[in-house]
Amino acid sequence: MKILRQIGIFMGICWISVIVEQLLPFAFPAAVIGMILLFFCLLLGIIRLEHIREKSDFLLGNMSFFFLPAGISMINYLDILSANLIPILVICAVSTVLTFAATAYTIQFAIAFMNRRKNHA
Amino acid sequence: MRDLTTAIFSSPFFGITLSIVTFFIGVKIQAKCKTPICNPLLIAIVLSIGVLLLLDIPYESYNEGGYIINLFLAPATACLAVSIYSRLGILKQYWFPILLGCAAGSAASMGSIYLMCRLFGLDEALTYSLIPKSVTTPIAVSVASAHGGMAPVTIVAVLITGILGSILAPVLIKVFRIKDPVAAGLGIGACSHAVGTSKALELGEIQGAMSGLAIGVCGIITVLFSLLL
Image (tube, rainbow over all chains, first blue to last red):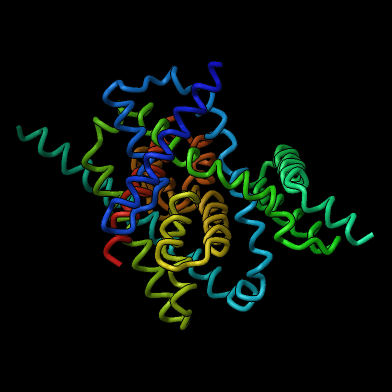
């Protein structure tokens, strides 16, 4: 019964987020709406962590498994992938390095800035 | 005979069993090899596609079961809220650098991918499949699909990025001389999501927690940026 209730909470949140997605005037993914919804439910204490612990451990712990069917549908796109393999690899490699550098430098700068302000105050 | 095999492989139980068995093999192989290249999802995709091609089973038959597994993606994405919520303490302490850094990282990622796609002359569908590829799969796939990208291409790109990021992470920290563990962790999470986070956890507790936090924050920021596309 405990697990059933947890499944019920998740299904309910996902269902509400589909409704919200339909009502929004712009394209915002339902899955992310569900994430924001759950976050605020936790923050406001409407849902407590122990209400969803087992189910969320199951979902987070097996996250990559749930992508398997979508990954396998690659079978229908093998020609596109193999035709563009080199650009895709180059794009992945270059953007990974740039993203890391942009994030890490900005944060180091921001933390230094915060510390300097703290020292002046 | 043909009818019999169709009946056997069109059952939803076939797709689900094949998925769990190949994923289980992937997990076992990674436990043995311990390198990011032996990613369980990557191994399971290759094995499953191999089985389907070898036995000449149409994707539609597999998807009778695959569709059911796919349903779990929405609740699994919502679950990312739990991992942000359980790190609320550090989020409050460093909210300013975290927001600024993740925004800079997401902008650098999406911007550089867009420019390189133009440079290589890739078409619209392929470009939108690649633009969100630095964030975690559920969010990347939703963003790509909303703009007419191809979900499977996005998944492959997300996987390649995650694996590259977790291999390169220690090198990048040295080359760019990132001394602050908070900055290092967020950088890893921003460029290589969950796969990178497992590497960040090996580097230290702060790096791991920060990397996990960056998954959710960069994900939301990328969705917000994609609204401008």
